[in-house]
Each structure stands twice: as C-alpha cells, then as structure tokens.
Length: 286
Length: 256
Image (cartoon, rainbow over all chains, first blue to last red):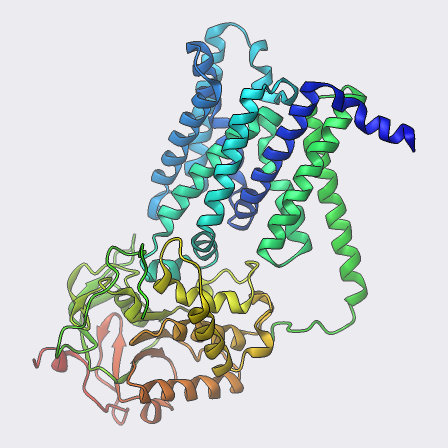
C-alpha cells in the first residue's frame, strides 16, 4: 500500500509534473465541455481542422518572436470566420468549406516551417509538450479554460436550442448562424489551449473522445458534460503517470487514455442493454 | 408580460396597429434558396383576429412556404406581409410557429419539459434564465396536452403523436396571439388528434388566431372558419362542394 502511494506521489515532487497535471485537467475539462456540443452538432471534423489550421499562426509567431498562443488564436479566429463565411446559409456545404480552409492553412504552416529550415523545433507544436508548460502558460491556459466554460454556461440555452432546433431559434429572431460563429471562436480558443497538451495532430481527440464516451452513457446534457469532464481529467492524469513511468510521449498517452475510457463506455453500454433486450422498451416510438 | 432585456431580434415589442387584421398578405411571391420555380406566386390572404384558417392543398402547393414566410424563416421576393399591422419580425412573441416534426433533431439529449421550455425563450432573450412564471406556463401546457407522465423523457423516446403534442405545448407556452401550425395532425394517433382538436378550439375561445396547414378535408367545416386553397404556389378555386366559409383569399385581402 505504501508503495502505491509512493508510486502516485513520486512524480508530484517535480514542479514540471505539478504544472503538467494542473494543465492537463484544465485543458481536459474545457475541451470535454465544449466537445459535447462538437459531438452533438456533428462538428467533429471541424475540431480536427481548426487544430491543424492554427499551425501557420504558431509558426509565424515563432518566426516573429511573438507569443505562440497569440499567433494560434489569431489563426484560429481567421479560420473560424472563414469557414463560417464560406458555409453561411449553405452556399457551400460546411464540410467542403472546412476541407478548403483546413488544407490551405496547414500547407501554409508547413511552407513557413520549411522556410526556417528546422522542422525539429516544431515537433512540440505537432505533438504537444505538456511537461514544458511554464507557470505563465498555465495562467493563460487557466484563463482560456475559465473563459470558455463561463461563456458556454452563459449562452447554454441558445447553444442548446440552435443545436436541436435551428428553425425555432430563427422564428424567435435568434440567429443560428451567429451562435455558430460564436461556437467556432470558442472552439478556436480551446484548441489553442489544448495544443500545449497533446499538440496540433491529436487535439481533436480531447474534444471528441470524452464527449463521445459520455454520450453513450446518458441522455441528459448536463450529465453528459460532467461525465466527459471527468473522463478527460482522469485521462490527463493517467496519461501523465504513464508518460512518467513508461517514458512515452505524454500527448499520445493522454489521448490513448481517452480512447481506453471510450472502449470502457462502449462495453458498459452494451452490458447495460443486453438484459433488457427481451423486455418491452418503455416509450418506444410506435 | 415580462420583456427581455436583450431580445434575440432587433426589437422587443411592437403594439398591434389598431384595426389591422391578424395577418395580411398581399401579392407575395417567394423562392426557396437555389430553386428556379417560385414556391409562392402572387398569393394574398387576410385573416381577421380570432379566426381559424386552414391552408389546404397537396404537397408542394406552398402551404409550408406561406407559414415560413409569416414566421420570418423565409424572405418574400415581392409583395407585403403584415402581422397585426407590423412587418414580420417586429414582435416575435406575438407569433408562434409549429414546424413539421422533421425540423427537430430528436436524438438531442434533452427531455420533453426542456423542449417545451424553449417556447418561453422569446420572452427571456439573451442571458436571462427561466423563472417561476415560465415554469408555471410550461406546467400548464404540459398538463393541457396530457404529457405530464412523459415530461422527463428524452424527446427521441416519445411516439410521433407525443412529439407532435410536445411541439404544440411549446407553441402554446409562448402565449402568442397568432399560431402557425404546419400539419399538426399529420400521421398522429387518435388520442393525439382528439387532444389537439380540443386544444385548438379552446384557443379560439380565448381569442387566438390560428392558421393551420392541413391535408384533412373532412374536418374543415367543423374546425375552421375559413380556408385558403393552394396549388402550385397559387391560390386555387375550391373544388365544387368544398368548404368555403369565411373568405380569406385574394378578394378579401384587397377589399380594404
């Protein structure tokens, strides 16, 4: 027993592990709460795309010696608005608009990278480096996470209504398009904060996998957000322990922990359903 | 009546113009985005306050389009629409729209009670949360449509008829004066049909104006005061022997 506690506390004596844990939980929770909307509105593709499109912002900020997060936020906003504008009132299908912005911006990022002749410096952008998070980064991540969750809480009823019934929203003068822009901007902020943890390539896993696991377990939206947050926070912690003891990439370990939770949720759901198979399901559509 | 601090539309309130009918449509033409043929051409309509009017016609005749136009979901290309004498969108809380069931994502994780509550949002606007008055209105509507035992059920686990009643409950809680109902009786069970019919006649007794798109020709005479027949986006002559009642079409719209 003593050794187990020692096993759990030993990494905590390092300052970089402490900040890592706090960052992983903050990022995990904000990604998970927002991720519930991403999953319910079938925006999984856009989460992935946004993550890739902040790359040129990161690289440009690096080349100019500016704050990397700031560069990423600007690139994320530009892409969000671009996608929203291209697909407004269904002029272009949204996934097509995303495909165009996503590949264009990612290519621009790679082009900028090749100009600096050093791909190696950027590996922490692509794959994350949560153990390199400084106290200042942590403050910024905390601020972003708090801001995102606060706005989601403030505009919950509009987000909910435009998600399941945009027609009703429009009939009371609430523009579903405007709400979607807002959601895309929040998504950009969240993605930027999350890049520190798992990098550009894997960030969409933090958005989608915990929310998808939660959606298998409940039909209540607040509970879905709660379960997704717990899954994401636990994955962040488990991933960091795995990374410490097995000496593997922290970003990959966090994402794989999310995946493991998703598998568990699927098994749990299957197990819950089986005994009821022969029983009449209450309220089944007639 | 409480008004929102930050309304969704641009305006929070507009008083009815004295003497104006509940709905006046004059020579309106409209297209759905990206289509060649007009969905409505030169349609006129006048619905006096307190009347129950049926929109009758086959699929694609323009019934839904006309309702959407009045609900502010579609913009007319030419012509004029006035609701209680004001332009569409001048006073969102005076109009309630009941969509066809397919417009709603029924898999979304909310329960019936929450769905009905969204009908109060027009009175809340941005940032404000539902209060005791809103909850009371929801309770009342749920009771009236016989949905009390189902109020905590996820909306996808309701039958078609129950979903339709939930949508009507939502249209009721807004306490609108003009109700636009798109095929509320399409493919519903007998119980739902009876409840909805009863609720609609109750509404008329309280002075509400009701416009309903319908396929059902048998109940026209007993449940409506007038009917507008549509075919291919135009006003059509009723079949010989069909219900006419109160004149609401072209001649009525231009008589004043």
